[in-house]
Length: 195
Image 1 (cartoon, rainbow, N blue to C red):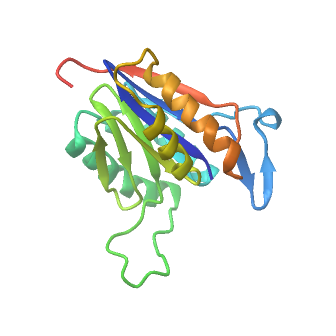
Image 2 (tube, rainbow, N blue to C red; image 1 turned 120 degrees about the vertical axis):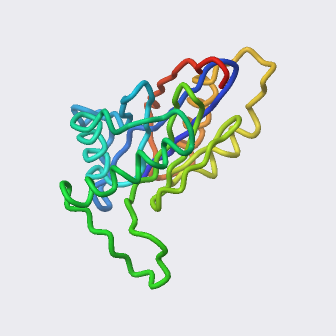
């Protein structure tokens, strides 16, 4: 899995993510991979993905071949983006949407991502649930550690940047979560006027 933080502070939004991946029970440290990043840049935003590497590669391919589909101006635009991409995901990338849950309300896209965009910070969950956050949020296997760290270190009035806060929270998760390991990668965007 992974540990991801997204932070909004001042006129900046930032995302931080660890670089460990797993193949079953085998840990694959970042130093053994030619491309350890789990960040995708598209449409002026950065998306950090948790879950399988297959989903990350799908997201990268969608960003490369369907970049015009990605819109990040609001909750509604992000919802519509992931709704449109879902059918492409099923048709072109052979996504299996069935689950063992008889009460499953929608087909799952299996994406669980955090987004730092010029319009703010967002989370998109597997059923295309989209949330926007005011200050910070976390996802992935180490999210509890990240959220605890963010709650204790986030302060609008100190000098730390959004990227520094996000990085530190994920570094803490790497200490305690056995599915997360550094180095931690960060990316940041400037918030648009009025956001």
